[in-house]
Length: 400
Image (spheres, rainbow, N blue to C red):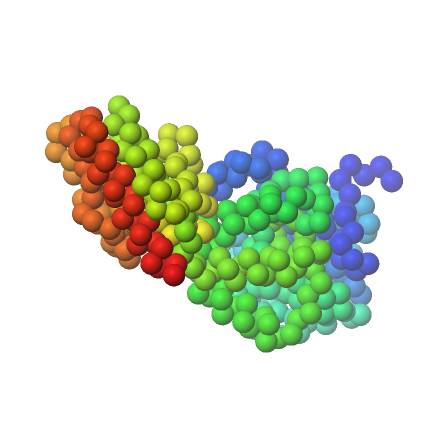
């Protein structure tokens, strides 16, 4: 066999035929420091079936992996679980070149593929519908808004394998294809980062979906997502983590995110963090000149407090802080205690502006914000420490 790119066996019937993107560093506004994978899967059934495709530039890599085990033209069905470009980018080309008998998608998937790629002839599958592949079958479950309106799962009962599209995945490029081949702490961190930055706005729907899947009694031995490794050793771990992350129960942890012009706001951040720590919280201090917004969001996923600091520039919140607040607000974290602080030289509008955003996010704001003219003296730093202690007390009362 002289193929460069080869398929990876998942079960006797299913092969991974995706692509590894080692270069990707930005995705939907968050930092993908470890790259990603675009996972596609080939089901070797009487009706040879491809589950999802890959980002357009990786089409040849995927086709080469398929060709390492079968002629790609033997593919009869293609299932599009999710129409986003990283999973459907090469679908139009495949439909033209492979000429499959049918392409399947959810109702909203059919609509999205038509509007996005002007594709006609995509067959709708309904929620709960079973598709026969001859000697195997797929059962479909719509998962609307987890995380697009078109999203759906496909379950292969013969192999007890769930094709979960963007659910239960992560952005992680690696030479390993399975969870038991990768350090568990890395899996949990990158899984949390993905949940916090992609799935979090739909957390209530995740809770309902997990309840529904449990009710379906799918005895899943494998979960095959569209990004990251296939779960085969510890399926219950990722299901449990999703339940935990979706619940958003506050923890004894505070995230202090800030930027600074002349280090005055930084001095305040350090003093506040001392008060938080003395109050019994784990503290993550994140200066925004070196911490990406998506990393802040990841830390917030399992936090009880969000403390934001900014100098005032041109009567506004500092640009990096404004960027963070816009990003976090869109992801809709819940059950947070918050506070605002910062130094200013002229008018100091940044602090009330931060407070307004925190309140709009339904954050339980402690005090009206702490701001200081120019450089904080010892008395102000004592106030900063006291603010941290007040926030910590509120978090402890929420945690119980």
